[in-house]
Image 1 (cartoon, rainbow, N blue to C red):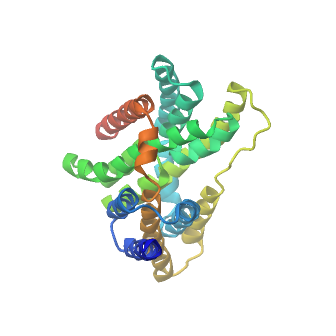
Image 2: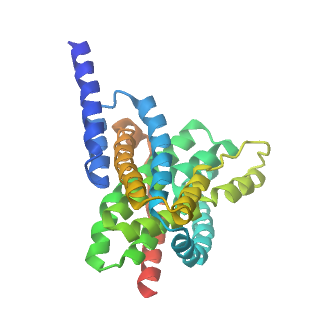
Image 3: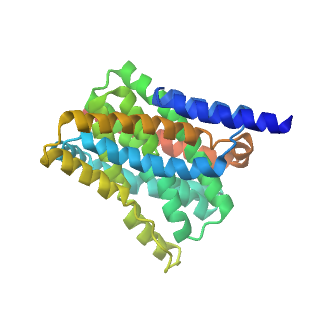
Length: 308
């Protein structure tokens, strides 16, 4: 009987994975979360590895639908705000974490994930500062929960406030944690929002490198390897190919369409990574810190983009 249940669960997993390619980004994520919290994820290790590879591949593929000159202009427009917000969130996160009694490495990881690019920043910085498994898990789940909320909340809020494609793309890129949800929210809002959000977010993700280097001195853990996000360079290369080589639009359009469907499947896999046990393990104080930092950067960014 148990074997039959396990077989049925595995079959359902692959059916939902295939179906998620044709759902919206938010619904794909929700499908994964519902499966994880009700029946469980039959392939947790596989889903974790596959989601990382698929996310990077889908982001690179989306680059084939973007113009390099327009994208650089969008990234340049958001550069100053990116610099200010990254430094501001890091300082605020560490200070608040100390006041709330959260261990230094835990608050540093949450601030890193909020300031730059969610789980990718935490995964890159964690080994550098010698964070243990509990600190990594608490930080990742805190960021993950808020990231999931943002994917559902941001598009309808943008519509309600009448944000333009450019305004929403900038807001999403700076205020949403992970690249997956930034791209998902941008795709849900519109093509221009997707392009701006993706470019600004990946420009922001480059801050992983200086932050990791800086962290080795702050936490005196030199010699640790820094995880460089090489897929960002491939994303830029894809834009350059689309801009300068004259590949037929039918070809690049097909690549972008497939990449969007892969992105939705990725969000399903990410949703499958959530569990009640992991949520309970987060604790209230790290979650409060994450919510406060997220609220600060979301409201501040929204005020700035609406004022411009």
